[in-house]
Amino acid sequence: MKNLLITGGAGFIGSNFVTYMLNNYTTYQVVVYDKLTYAGNLDNLLSVADDPRYRFVKGDICDATAVAQAIRQYEIDTIINFAAETHVDRSIMDPDAFIQTSVYGTYVLLEATKRFGLERFHQISTDEVYGHIPPGYSSKETDKLDPRSPYAASKASADLMVNAYFVTYGLPVTITRGSNNIGPYQYPEKVVPLFATNAIDGEPLPVYGDGRQMREYQYVLDHCEAIDLVLHQGALGEVYNIGTGVEIENMRMVEILLDELGAPRSLIRHVADRPGHDRRYSLDIGKIRALGWEPRHTAEEAIRLTARWYRENEWWWRKIKSGDFLAYYQAQYGRRLAEAPTTAG
Ligand code: NAD
Ligand code: TYD
Image (cartoon, rainbow, N blue to C red; front, side, top):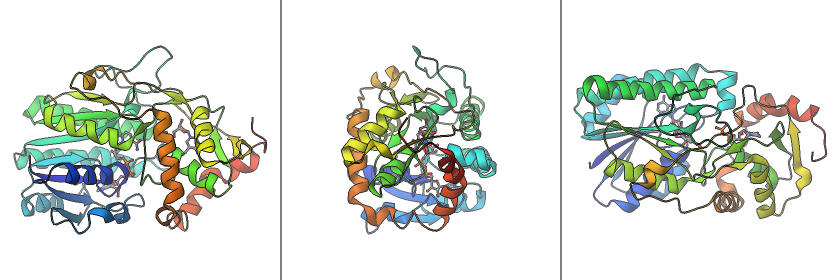
């Protein structure tokens, strides 16, 4: 493993992973292959832009010719696939691109892995493929997939395809299923950066429903370390859950965030819930722990670090929270906020 193609590497987790790998492996070459959708952003990669071991290729993973050209040109031996449409609310509004990228695009990358005899294909997946998890249980890698949003279904489809290529063609694949990541460079449609930036501006925080849904918020660099471990020590054909093993209620996340930013609880608005909203995700992380990995941050530490990063990096998010984002925000929240009671509930 020395020449990595990191698809979706201009997004949130992918860009953190690129920086992490360049910092930790002096002999690796890293090629970011990214379509630069609304969520892709070369500002995320400014710190490595002048590194001679880094290259950027603008391209779609659904484009088999362009994928093949990048593999040939840069003598790629490993693909790590972060490319996806990633926001559940957008998948409810318009699922098409989710299916194109995660289903067809993953197939294109698997075919390329087979054709060029690559050393490894690694798929970045999510805890959302397991669906809602009742209290008292945590998902194991062998559990049945039960995705309930178009986003989760597109990711589960990709996982099934990756496994099929392992079983049928013996492709050297691995899959990691991460819980909710937070940290630097997360597009502010996701809840923690959305709420942090709204709170900084004194704008309301639209909490879906009662806010008692549970998520396993993990710090993005912890996730990157675990992916690195699976790349180097994971068994082929295997799936590894990555999270903190501890889920918290959204309302608790909101309280920590507001406290860290010194913003008042009166910004909280309970708004109409997301359709089909999964109440709880929870991962059993025993398998990745057995490889020797432990998360370095609790959810609270991750939320505080993330809130501080957004407070200190307005240069990054102010230009995103304009233009198309405002149209999206109005479509997603305009009516919900207009109909919400104005006091914290
Ligand atoms: P993101 O939305 O920030 O970034 C996605 C990146 O993929 C963007 O740079 C985008 O331009 C690129 N992309 C989209 N479609 C593409 C295509 N057809 N071809 C090439 N590039 C394309 O997403 P993220 O939060 O960084 O998530 C990265 C991966 O991790 C995704 O596969 C996601 O499902 C998975 N994941 C995310 C989380 C999370 O909490 N964010 C948790 C678990 C798993
Ligand atoms: P999100 O960041 O969209 O991630 P995911 O849906 O993939 O878990 O949402 C995290 C949680 O926050 C989820 O329970 C939905 C909730 N949420 C809100 O309450 N309000 C919001 O405006 C958003 C975007 C999410």
